[in-house]
Image 1 (cartoon, rainbow, N blue to C red):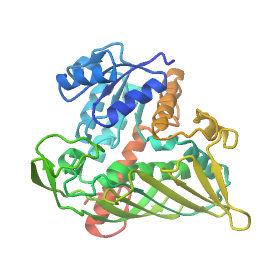
Image 2: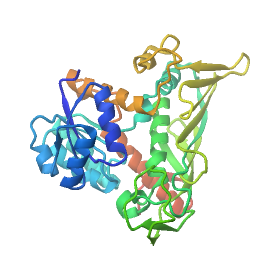
Image 3: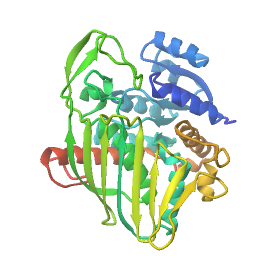
Image 4: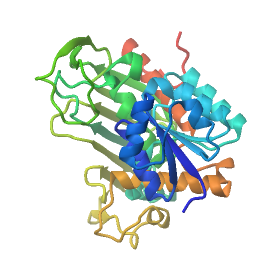
Length: 386
């Protein structure tokens, strides 16, 4: 059981996932903060936590809160993270860290000045077989990187009547599919390969330039259709689909595509990494198997079994082989890593968990992707906007 206590800001789709993950990681959750006091109280009762905070001021004044998890809409991340850091509390923020690289750079600097642990919730790193892939790459089993390809594909915005605040650039940012799910893929691949994306060439597409917004609220991934509710037509400029060519620091090449309008794909991240000694392939919809390809010997299908995988991957595995683990377990494992780093003081050195610096780099990559699409050319990461 952790000696630290947490509070969660945001009570939509992902906030309760954090509450559950924290409890499974042995962290006490003192309370939650919704978009208004009534929502805070209702969520506190539903999630069985002691407090529904009336405001962020009230949450930050609670001396019993050591760590704040920010799961609110994107446009609030910067200001809320900034206030948490000013209060001297540790923070774990959902992606994207901020709305632009100027804001995320400020948060990196403020976190360093505050001397607290600051993480971004790139939880997909914590699938055990993704850790196994990283260990194979870093130990030399993969060999020299030739190229990488993959995708992150969903269908929850397949219909023009599907709507969520994320489709609006004012709420979610100028990029949507790339920023919302593509950044998970990009963070994972860069972490596995232990090298950054250095340049991008992107082509994006808005399938539905107009969507129907329900006059009432709608929940993320609710699966509810809106044909029989009153709606209004809303202009949409964020992308439903995107394809991005990548150039890594080593000169290796890659390609990523993302879609939130691919029927039948509920939440599917895939990668295939080609090295000079073997290839690695993984699919988040079958997360308990890593496919290892060979030229001159039989291919392997490595199961998520702590007796068979690298010790670091086994450490992120809670159950024996054949007892499947999935999405919710990645939150538990990330939180376990993050909170143990705080308790041990390891966060002051070079932490393994995704940091604000990682979140900042992702935003720089996103800005380069948007600029590349607009100008239809290769863009180096960090290239000036003018």
